[in-house]
Length: 105
Image 1 (tube, rainbow, N blue to C red):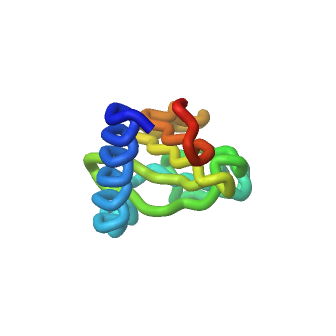
Image 2: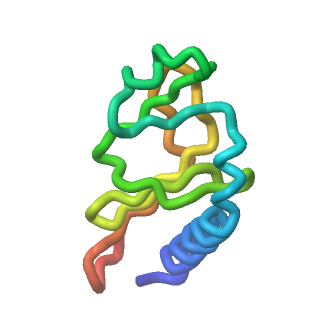
């Protein structure tokens, strides 16, 4: 693994750790991320915004104002979301894909 890939992985892990440490910040956000059912919260009178996240993106791991929301897929892929548009799927700001040992990708 070359030094550039190691630096990218280290930066991603650092962002993930910072996000996990500040997970309580996410609770105060007004956007609702509903990975289970995108229609469930749309009719809730207390909900002002619904952003949907595909179930394939995995489990919610935490978030912060700097790194956004973090999701980890079963294959180890990490996705960080920094912008949650109402009524649609958010764009992935950073995606970290795990490679096989010794891979140069």
